Length: 113
Image (tube, rainbow, N blue to C red; front, side):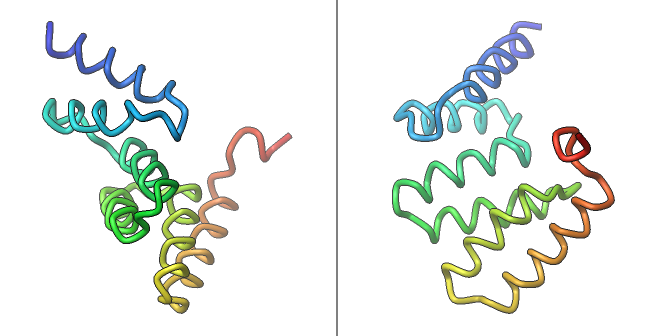
C-alpha cells in the first residue's frame, strides 16, 4: 500500500510540473525505479529532454512511448516532430497521418466542442 501511495504522489507531482522544471528528470527516475512509467510519462520526459536540446534522446523516449501503446494523436505528433528533426521525413509523414487518423477516430473532448 505504501509503494502504491508513494508512486501515485510522485506521479501527480510529475504531471503537475512545468515542462522546463529542473525537478522533472529526478521524478522521472523515481517513477522508473518504482516501475510505473507509462507512455504519458515518457512523452512528458521526451518533451523536457527536447526542450533542453537533446533531440536524439527525446526521440528514443518518444518512440518508446508510442511502442507501449495504445497510441494517441498527441504522442504520434510529438514523435513525428522528432522524426522530422532527425531527417526521417517519410517516417514523420507516416506518423503524422497516423496521428490524424487516430484523432478522427478518438477525438479529444476539447476537439468535439
